[in-house]
Length: 400
Image (tube, rainbow, N blue to C red; front, side, top):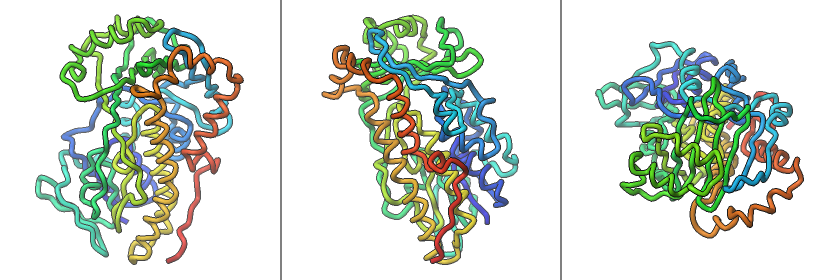
């Protein structure tokens, strides 16, 4: 089968690697002029690292194991801890802090250079009974048996589907983030999250002395808060009464260290494609980064597709509909749960911030010590078909 993959980010590169390993002929079209090497860091929970292992990628070589996630109030009161080593033991897959570029480069490393076409922005998609055809801004046309839209939240493939599918919405929150090598902070393989009525501030180890820091807060497009040079003084004022190491972080940062990530999300629907076109990753279900499931959910999409395609019959309309139905039915509920939790995980405005006040958070410190870990175990299986199965998931499509 000839598969076109639109987008060479994490989702697209993983799809190209997985489907290439199955013997399919792959062509990757990426609108950027070269491989993107930006971004800060991500947390890969056990579902994401399990899929990477299935692809033959050693996730532990990419970053640093996270052994626990410790949660504090804004004033520094210890509230709860999630023992992520227990997740690794149960699922045989670690939780990691990983510089995004490390993961992206590793996925691209195993792809033949000749299948990667950069500067190829899609301008037209036409899906027919026996093929799908795309045209790029350079006027080149490509014809294939299947098109996978992995081209991000502003997906050209998604926009070309009949319907059309709704665009991503802003949530009213954003994350200022960065990757630092000189913070005077020793995390000792543990993540920290500080929560208060103004949002959340987090720190994640990312390997080789790197620390990912992030600040989740209310956001509306504003010239002062969207420019790092103007935002930094406001952030220092905003969090001046928060505990160490939050104040130390903000004192240490310069305007060149800040990257703004406005939160956007799709309302996860029941349709992620049409005919010979399928969406994965942010093109299908963009979500805020608070739950750290963006990459994980994209890898879940890839994992399922590699199990469904060997038995898919794309030569008939019934066969194509069976593939669409099986893919969306199995993935939509999990992605919807992940997106909902990511949107509501840390309140940045409105009445829900009252639950993050110093007084309200005192009750969290009284929870049984093992309860947060058990809750996260349940959450991981709720958003992951791969972890529920305990092994690479085998699927066969019913014959139409």
